[in-house]
Length: 110
Image 1 (cartoon, rainbow, N blue to C red):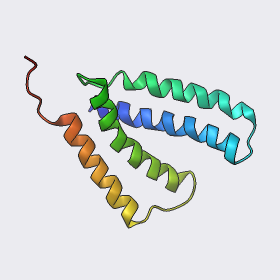
Image 2: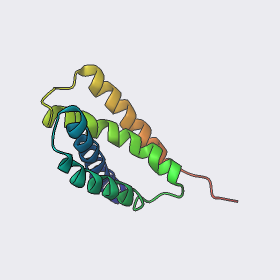
Image 3: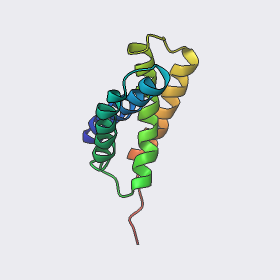
Image 4: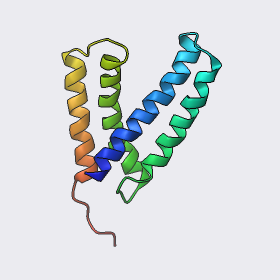
């Protein structure tokens, strides 16, 4: 359960940080948007280190599914574009994949 909370916080930080850069470069916002954006991206990287996993790559792979669903929620709540059925289906498949990666039984290391 702790890992799920961390993944959600991590996704929020990553998306907010990336959106700050998007807002600056694509929406013409002030360069000052990069300050909170950079801080959010630092928090994103730091938070990922708290996920219970034996390997960084496995953590990043599992996080990818959470990131995709969080991005679709951002699309809907912040950008006002409602995800269609293919977005929802794709997000569900990604979450299932993330759960398999994160919670699947592992053989003990030799």
